[in-house]
Length: 363
Ligand code: B12
Image 1 (spheres, helix red, strand yellow):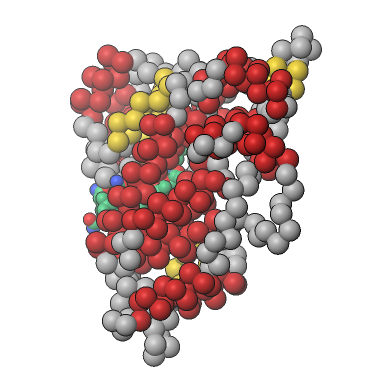
Image 2 (spheres, protein in one colour):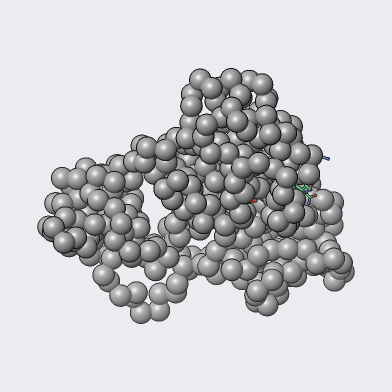
């Protein structure tokens, strides 16, 4: 995965792709040859030609609607009711699609019962999307086994979309942001889009903003739109199929809530019942809510040293009174194991998939 980052001398680079680095330096180089923010020192006549050249460079239109099934585990895990809940498609229709079109094709356990994998669930979601776009289900099912047409190019990798998204944020081009998100979702699961597109772009937006190379307006515009997209993914997930109820939020004074939202999304997609409370929760009031609602776990996110300390104080007060699991994570703790060393509760780490597995494991 190419992660956008700033080097100490504030030049733009992409860590794993020289091709991408080349594109970045083209995007960020002004006419005098000096590097600059995409938003500054561009001649008034240049933007249109610049954008057209850039779009040409990125080969817009190389988009296919292939399903990236390789990105999903094929391990048989879920019964038909779990898939019904995960996708919103009835068990009856699932069986009917299998009988008529051969997809999904679940494994059978020793008693002949269907067991579906994450890949099967992704396939069902993909079929449902095509159907909602007006494609007949028989045609959509046939598309799954069609070889790529001659000359057809693969979908743009997420690293290419990172660049387009960053550029769209700089130009406050809302439609382009939506197009990029839609294309990303056609080629990768929501989790991958969150981790390999939205997160690196948000980090990059922060770096550019900090270096004074992206306007405050563009930064707010980008954060707002990407956060809204994540909230939308979160709301669209179907009902939970696990019994655990997890409350996710941020400690007092923590205004960064996107990481917590991404984690809440992962949990909901893994079938947990998730209540998302957002940023800057007030300690006393939250403790009252926990007594009243009695969730299985509380998961909090902190980004700065100050709010990590606030989280520690809150968890200290909850220890011995809250019977559920206290867990935490976030940028403040990702720097190293020492940062959260004195905080009671479970540090879930920076890998969200592993964090979900930790909470799913029987106590
Ligand atoms: C957007 C943003 C804001 C927005 C937040 C809006 C919102 N609704 O979230 C606003 C404008 C409010 C803001 C304010 C400030 N910000 Co700010 N902000 C950012 C920015 C650009 C993006 C943050 C983001 O959304 N990241 C994307 C998410 C997905 O990443 P993440 O949080 O790391 O989460 C991932 C993991 O950490 C993990 N994770 C997160 N939470 C949890 C929880 C659990 C349980 C688990 C398992 C995992 C997990 O999973 C996530 C996905 O992988 C960052 C830049 C950056 N490099 O991060 C700066 C940044 C975080 N901000 C920074 C600063 C300094 C501030 C301010 C102090 C600025 C100021 N002087 O006022 C204030 C602080 C406000 C406060 N009291 O909290 C610094 C923090 C430096 C530091 N370590 O202290 C950063 C790094 C910018 C920078 N380069 O200096 N900010």
